[in-house]
Image (cartoon, rainbow, N blue to C red; front, side, top):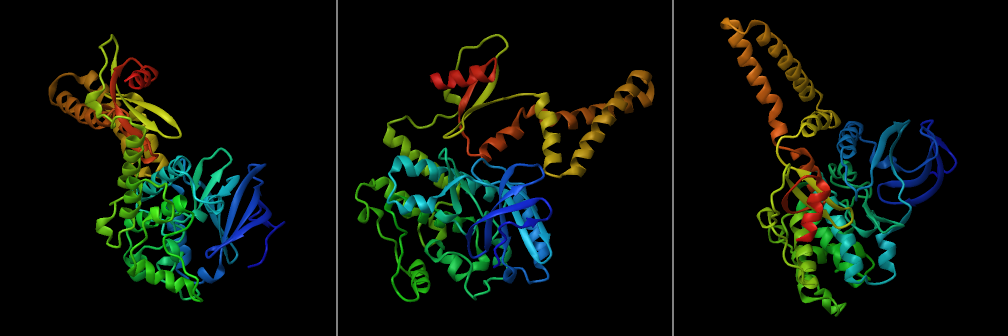
Length: 422
């Protein structure tokens, strides 16, 4: 592929330098001119992968889905576009290094590896909840910024080529050392558990300094594929004796050949890792919402308290909440569910009309009909509000926050303090 360094792309991206090249294409550091001064990563897909006339529509559909992913550990997509015969994806630029570069320095201690790995699992689970499989989970696709915060990249981009089953070189898409057995044997029948396997390989490599299967053969890729399908992975303790038996069991469960015997999702994988950390630290298991109590106080409302390993605590009020009501509509607009948002808006307008009619008529059949309509619209309009900040709870769970419990409190800050005190 030609080097675009110094070129102006789409009239708004000035390419600074080539960052790297991979199976999917080239990645450049670029300066976004609108708005000015913003650094970004510009990925140009290989033309060999995009010659299919149907690719443009599939690419656009998938990119729109990816653009909706919002997670603190997923590289944010700014936009996607086509210029001439080339397809581009603009992403936030992460100033740091890849997880692969970190592993090149040697095996990582648990205290360093597990926080990064938990963030990866949280990001994968977020994508899975949106129905998107990564398909190419590997250390090179994890970027760690200068503050130590990890970001998963190339989420779902491989799907467009995977739908064709093979790459231009005639090989199944993916990196052999991290591919699940089913990805090698039946790439068209993958589900999210394939990402569980690949994540298990990544954790194995973080802890030992190398993936479970390697080969010095001339055709190393084919040899590794055979191992992925037929060979049992080694116990990570055989390579790094300091790894605990419990953590080794967690890794090996993720690497089961039969996907029905693995963790059935990245959330379950994450829960196992967190449970291991708690057993090592001596902390009591997480308590459910009934285990956190506080004396009643005037004006107290029930709050659910969540905790994130990197972002800290958050509290969500239960019960009716006007912000939750408006937040539901705002969420619909953000998700481009314009029809639903219009229906809610129409319901609100209808509610106001019904109130005016009821106030003006008050008697007779028309009045009763107006009151009935007002009641129905009122119920429809207020139902999300009675869920409290339910819309935010879903968002927190998708971002990797874990429910710690609930407490009665007069504000979010007090709820967090009470939860910490327990």
